[in-house]
Image 1: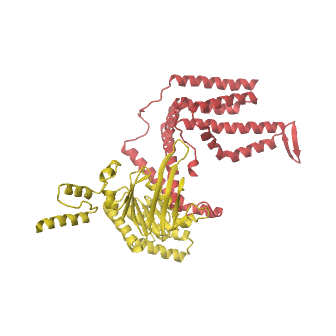
Image 2: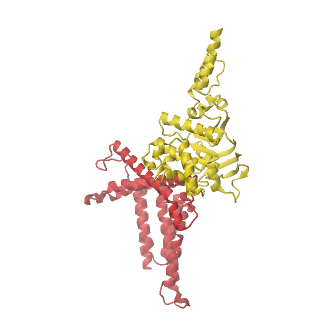
Image 3: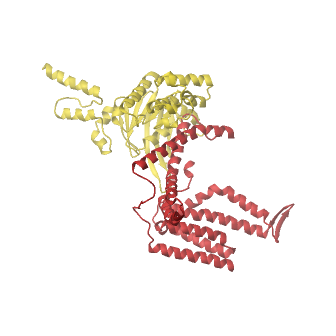
Length: 266
Length: 286
């Protein structure tokens, strides 16, 4: 149950997308999101669909992995499309019942919104599935480097992010273990009224917090023992360098965005 | 009254890139009142195996029978099973949560549906059994030493009066003195309470002294299953899977090879002393 969480989950494979520089993938995800909110009309949607399908195909990550992320937002999807369906004013009324009416524009809006949200989740999950969390924070650190000039602690932020990401699977494992240990003592996490269920979480949450603090303490100690003093003067063992494929990827991205914008005008 | 495992298979994250076959056709019978050691290297499947015994993990295929009943039957009461088969996890002190030692130990019995008095009696008895001094009963468990916290955690399981007590690496992270105390305590409980005890460890030295039967796990399968004497006679094969027999086994094999003792089957220092004394005694008399 708890193992179904897919945030920050990396799917190991050997593909072009996996090999791309993380900065390209970050930029790509950003431009992709922009394109999702820029596009208009069926032609734009079609272009985005083709682009997304190509990325999925190139990444060699099974589609089922990306769709898994959708499960968490099913409720959101239903809500937004229902709201758009019923609450969009328009001229071509298809159906009316009292104050409730469905318009042609409403149907179009609902469908486009549905596609937007689904594509958003699936598209961005390609980035996280095809990039190790470490590469991602490395890329972020390097991409945000210019902000250091205005005293943004970029290195510290990147370090905090990579530690946080690294600890997600550890904490999930810990939750799993503590749950099992308390279940072995007869704890019940699934039945009972809401108040009872919240109360039942105490034997899970107290040990979890205690252990999170203990781990944080240990990690800080271990870092200090290795003379970690922050980012000043630190070099990387594997510095990020753009390869030819990265420049090609940027070109494709630029062409893609231009295409989406051009199709708006049509 | 026994636990029977019939060709139990368990696969982690089936059908994904991370698929791991943790258990491979395990068939075992655990008799009532036995004192068993399960030994294996890290990742050999021993922790996975014991989580099947109280139904926390469900076998991918195969069956488990507790006291003659299939625990995978749809109407089987798994929460009752978990109280009959008490499982003490690795580093159990990490699961303490209540404000006092006493309340923490009461958690199990309260979940069994006992009233406050009954649960309190059980907790009192369990804490006594693990040798905790009364003055700490109403202190916070977080202020105790590592060894004491572990005792409290074991008492938390013991208070449910399980028929079978399983302990996963109960000595991990303890100093030699704490280790001996915990092991002596467990052996004592096996004797006094007459419960079945399963001790999981990666150290032969730990278990050789106490248990009647050793199950050696390797790569999700049972490699050897027998008395300590039988199992340690395979000491060369044990080394091949990164396990070692107790040091005294090596000594006795050397002594026998040198023609000094006749019997090399000693598994504890006590037994070794006996057979060495016997050998020299006989020589002396000649």
